[in-house]
Length: 250
Ligand code: HEC
Ligand code: HEC
Ligand code: HEC
Ligand code: HEC
Ligand code: HEC
Image (tube, rainbow, N blue to C red):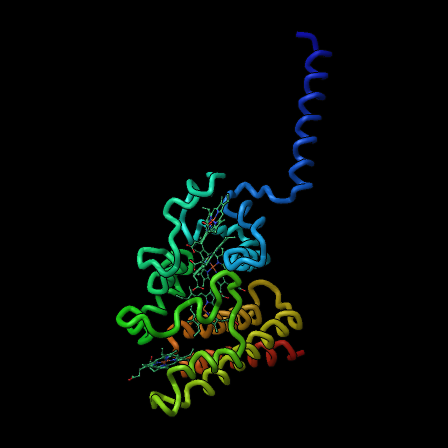
């Protein structure tokens, strides 16, 4: 085989490759995952379409957590029925997204949050009666946002109110504590920008302590331990104060 022949073969093959690649790019839909490919073409006016489009732009999409990771099924099969093998409606108790199964489905990747959640009273309640908040109550299933303080009060007030009488003060307290958590996050982010401590310095370790306290505060949410969240945030503040004092010393 002459070199000339090989070179032209390359050019032809390369041309076909470029052609097909640009063909896909124009369609914009081939993600290598059949669930996403097909569902992204479903009309947004249908219930299934709305749910499918919700996932787009989520943090899970950005990290390649596709539909099958939560719903099961076969993401390599282009045929609908084949792909749907094992995909069950959330109303089916065998489904991975049945409300009682949601914590363990999410927990397969978010183990720390799941573990805290299993220590809560609400988890036991969810297991026993199916009532009570679970992961998607506060995060949404596809969007995985975090509730804002106003909405969290509305979730808690469903059971914690004067009429039912169990801890009716909780919704307002939850709202205040979530606001505090947000302020804490913003403060830490600002201090990180402001001080930029050198690696290995005392200041760097204060910043690290503050970071751990914030992480712990976030985790405590999953046990609904509002007082522990406040304590963690207080500790975070203490560390940030040390950082500030130590950084302003000449
Ligand atoms: C070829 C198109 C196609 C593929 C591939 C596909 N789906 Fe679907 N899916 C649909 C359509 C259309 C519906 C609406 C209901 C129906 O027609 O079965 C649907 C419905 C669903 C539902 C709702 C089920 C219910 O009972 O409420 C879920 C969940 C779902 N699909 C997940 C997936 C997952 C996960 C995959 C990949 C493993 C996948 N789909 C692959 C087209 C597809
Ligand atoms: C991080 C996990 C997760 C991912 C990723 C995810 N879903 Fe879901 N999805 C859920 C959960 C949980 C529910 C249950 C409904 C609820 O309580 O909000 C649900 C509900 C649905 C429903 C409503 C039907 C039903 O059974 O309730 C459809 C349709 C659906 N998802 C399709 C998709 C498609 C299509 C993708 C990918 C584009 C996807 N989902 C990605 C977790 C996920
Ligand atoms: C297959 C693994 C996987 C599953 C299952 C999964 N997640 Fe995630 N999740 C990730 C990854 C990866 C990220 C992005 C990196 C990170 O923050 O850890 C993420 C991020 C998140 C975030 C952070 C959002 C932010 O803005 O920082 C939340 C909240 C979340 N997931 C909730 C859920 C919920 C609720 C479920 C179940 C309905 C779930 N996840 C199921 C892998 C998963
Ligand atoms: C009562 C509401 C609530 C419930 C229920 C809940 N979370 Fe959270 N979750 C939060 C709050 C509040 C944060 C902190 C958000 C922030 O960073 O502003 C959070 C943060 C997270 C994060 C991001 C942590 C990080 O490092 O930024 C993940 C992942 C997560 N939750 C997963 C879960 C999973 C999995 C479940 C179910 C087992 C669950 N959550 C149930 C309120 C909740
Ligand atoms: C579906 C009903 C329901 C919802 C929604 C609910 N709770 Fe509860 N919660 C209960 C019940 C029932 C108890 C137990 C009261 C008792 O000890 O007798 C409880 C107890 C508590 C306790 C004290 C027990 C413990 O775990 O130490 C806290 C704190 C709490 N809830 C916080 C919250 C917060 C915050 C929200 C909103 C994100 C919320 N709850 C939403 C039903 C609910």
